[in-house]
Length: 287
Image 1 (tube, rainbow, N blue to C red):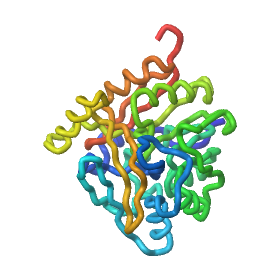
Image 2: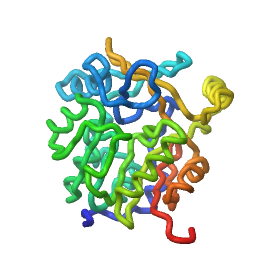
Image 3: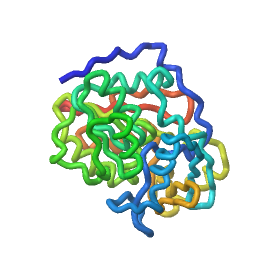
């Protein structure tokens, strides 16, 4: 059941490209209907901003995506090329995370397929899921063998059993809110093997002193939301996704969310920036 891979090295522990803004774009696409705050199953061509940007890059027309937060803050992303990087171009931090994948892998928010392609080369069986038709078209064109247009909330037993659930590109945020996080972690517990692990990249919203972000946190608290529950949409040229919620949490908040679900955090890899990778495994009896 294992696919071949190197063991992580200590040198990776302090390596990571600097992350410069708390609106870091999730690797997967946003989708949904107006007024909804989670991702849904329907997406029109005019809503698939992320997928269109990937397709343009694939065909030699690179452009920048914009992330717009619900308070009006707009962040211009660094470029679409990062979604197409080969393993040798990744940071040690990303390579370390990928090396933890084993067996049959569910790549959540597979984007342009960079993790799926690398894991295929290592001998893993990979199922990539995304809600962007454009992203899935790019994945297939690049050689990802098994990709499905499935939202995170729709992952079920029809996909089979997994040894690893991979959520890179800050895709832990796809859980959207605390209640949904717990529900889906419990479901993942049933859909995975006894020694399964979740490898998730997470953005810690508290690693900032920017008044704009701190004020947004306080606004969320007043509304009964987690401080790092961000409402945003992705824009590209004249395309834009519907608004959706995306969840940023600290490592301590993640431990609290996971505690009643049968998972526990066994390792945290710090990036040296705003993000970290959390490794979750199934709790043993008495833990």
